[in-house]
Image (cartoon, rainbow, N blue to C red; front, side, top):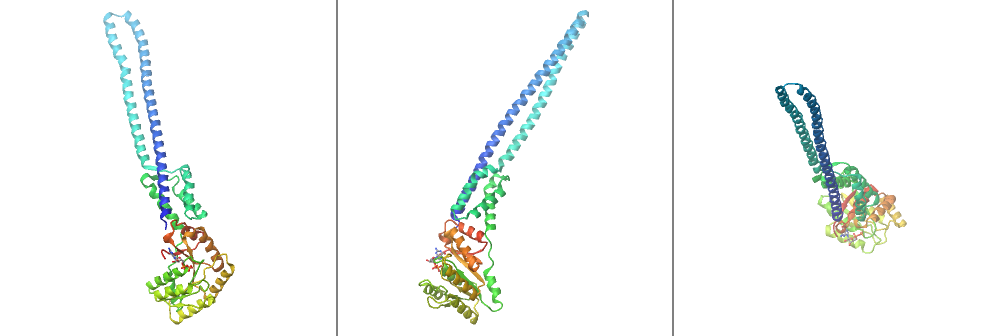
Length: 387
Ligand code: GDP
C-alpha cells in the first residue's frame, strides 16, 4: 500500500544525503586550500625573519668590525690576528640562532598541520544539513506527498517536522539516510492515531450481558458488505459470536450478497424486504443477539453519498434506534482527499468513531491513510486487503 510513497521518500532521503556530501566535499577542499595558503605565508614570514635577523646581525658586526679595525690599526700585529679570529666566531653566532628559530618554527607548523588534518578527518565523517540544502528539496518532498494522496495540511506538517528534526544537526555521514527515515517514521506514527482494541471493548461490553453493536457506513461500492463479512470472520476467529443486520434495503442485490456471505461463514443474517426501514432491521438484529446471547451485532447500511441529505437523515434514525457502540466509516484508500471529505460529512451527521480503509491492496499511493486519520482525528481500525 505504501510501496510507491515509501520508495519515493527513500529516493528523496538519498538525494538530500548526496547533496550534503557534495557540499561537505567542496567545503573541505576550500579549507585545505586555505590551510595550504596559510602554511606558505607562515614559511615566507619565517624565512623573511631569518633573513632580517641575519642582515641586522651582519650590520652590527660590520660596525663592530669597523671599530675594531680602528683599534687594531693601533695595536700590535699579533693582537690583530687574535682579534680577527674572534670576529669570525662572532659573525657565525647569529646564524646559529636563526637556525634554531627556523627549526622551532617548522615544529610549530608541523603541529598545526597535524591538527588541521585531524580536524578534516572528523569533518569527513560528519555532515550538517543546512537550511538552504533542505529548502532546495523541501518543495520536492511536498510534491511527492501531495502526488501520493497526502492532504496539503498533512504534507506541510511532515515537511515542517522533518526540517526541525534534521536541519543544523551534525549527523554521521553513514547514518544520514537512516536518520531521515527514522524521523519520517516517527512523524508518520505521530500522525496515525492508534485505535483502541476492538476485541477487548466487545468483551467488556458483554460483561453485563448486552451485545456490542457496530454500525458500518460509507458511500456505495466502498466495500461495506465485504468488510462486514471479513469482520464477522475475524470475530469468529477470536471466539466471538455475531449476527449481521442487512440494513442496506436500498441497493439491488445487497440483501442477497450479505446473505451469501452469512451462509458461507455460518453466521445468521437478519433481513427484511427491499425498501424496509433499516433502523427496524438493526433493532431486530439486536433483539436476536440478546435472545441468543451473542457477543456482537454488525449493521450494514445503504451506501449514500455524503451530499445526499435525506439519506444521511435516515442514518441519524438508525443511530437513534440502535445506539451503536462503534460507528465505523468504510472508505476506499484509493480515493485520496475524497475519503477525507466523506468522513467529515458522516462525522458531522452521525459521529464517526473510527475508519476502515478498503482496497489497500490496489492502492499504490498510501497517502489517504495518512490524511484521513490526521484531518478527522479518527483512528484507522483495519485495512481491507482483498476482494
Ligand atoms: P458496498 O456497496 O459498500 O457494500 O461494497 P461491496 O462490499 O459490495 O464492495 C464493492 C466492490 O469492492 C466489490 O467488488 C468488492 O469485492 C470490492 N472490495 C471490497 N473490499 C475490497 C478490498 O479490500 N480490496 C479489493 N481489491 N476489493 C474490495
